[in-house]
Image (tube, rainbow, N blue to C red):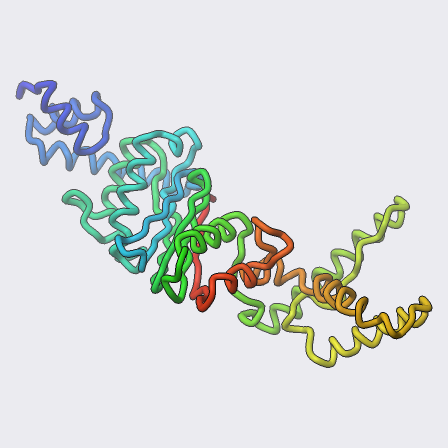
Amino acid sequence: MAKITAAEVGKLRKTTGAGMMDCKKALVEAEGDFDKAIDILRKKGQKVAAKRADRESSEGVAVAKLNADNTAGVAIVLGCETDFVGKNESFVTLAKQFADLAIDHNTKEEFLAADFGGMTVADKLIEQTGVIGEKIDISGFEKIEAPYVGSYVHINKIAAVVGLSANVDNAETLAKDLAMQIASMGATTLSYKDFDPAFVASETEARIAAIEKDNEELGRLGKTLKNVPQYISMSQLSEEVLAKAEAAAKAELAAEGKPEKIWDRILPGKMERFISDNTTLDQEQCLLDQNFIKDEKSTVAKYVASYGDVHVTGFKRVSLG
């Protein structure tokens, strides 16, 4: 039997990340052959991966990486099964190493096939599954390219990247603020203009039904009822709809006995409230239509406009689970 030294065990551990005893057993089985020992550990990982393939990798680490000139950004999630593993320093380091490599690839498939220390990323994931004993995978992969790209990571749980149309003054601040908004508020699209009309119609019906059901219970309890909106998106507020809303507001003012000469001071606020009450879908899912988290009196669109001739070209978000 080949004599296995501590130095050899340490070298294999450094190369693979496997435990000391696993490395020693692999070297003994390989009779001291270093490459064969790596293959033994990899096969062990394949067996563990096969057994745990149906497990959920709902924990892990979310990481963002930008290239040197801030024209590309990638957000990935290295998933695992438990929070204990997800917080492990070596696991977090591996996630960052993967992100460093991912920035050079456009798709998850390309990335998984890329070389990582003499093996593919996919093989490294299998190897680490054997080392850690949990299912390890890339559960999120998103990339953005633009004239300027920024990013934000929220406590290793959510990562966002956002693209700007130009590298304007203080672009770094703007991009980071937007990425923070995306991470925190979970926008799914840029503007209400991106919505499919059929989706908006279906969502309107569902939301109105849900509010009416809530109101039945609130009414039974003698509590204040929720406002039932007519619409939920700016895409539904045609000129005709807005004109009818304004006419209704004027009729209300007349019924209240308000002098017509002061209506111009009151109407803008009433119309703003009407639009706010009837665009809840936009406020939830459309980045530009959301209230800005650092100043809720302003929208994201207004905040972007304050930086001059620049607009958001796109964004991506990944999270655990």
